[in-house]
Image 1: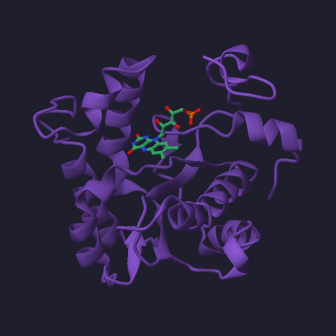
Image 2 (image 1 turned 180 degrees about the vertical axis):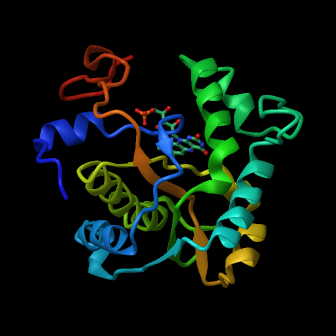
Length: 220
Ligand SMILES: Cc1cc2nc3c(=O)[nH]c(=O)nc-3n(C[C@H](O)[C@H](O)[C@H](O)COP(=O)(O)O)c2cc1C
């Protein structure tokens, strides 16, 4: 089932959903594969398809992956993330616009991460270590459009997603859990997926266009 939203609506209301992810509703493999089929139409350098995808829907595996995410963001049931002792993502949130709100919402995600119906794990073939900007850009740019397309396709089907990269701080451990050969593939993040509660999302705050755009040459 699709919602019939306009392209612009999907593009402007696909949010990082954390608190409103309903982890009690199952998500079928069929709808996940449908979203991924759409995502695979994303552009990628020389059309090399240097990606692999793992979808984790076994509850025990979800819990193990979630455990790594929680460690990365320093979240535990007795002490939600926010302590920056390990230099983790929570420390970053303190320095950014509306950071407290993001942190609160991130903690809500960490709390329910182990109950997610599914976690999508995109992988890119190869390692960026030591590469020049041209090659790094080609690698990152060949996976992120597909990840975002997945999020958009999911939104159109009533599914919420939350793109997260915190687990990259524990890449080795995540790769061990999932059997990923780290010398050949890079773990770039985790995408929990669940049906969302409610039926609409607002446009988010962004720096205004006037602050980020100049014409013809750089200014400022
Ligand atoms: C590269 C990247 C990494 C992110 N990593 C995390 C993360 O580890 N945990 C998390 O809760 N959100 C993460 N986010 C979500 C952002 O916090 C979110 O996109 C931002 O606050 C704007 O909110 P919006 O997506 O709802 O517009 C990440 C987003 C991006 C693009």
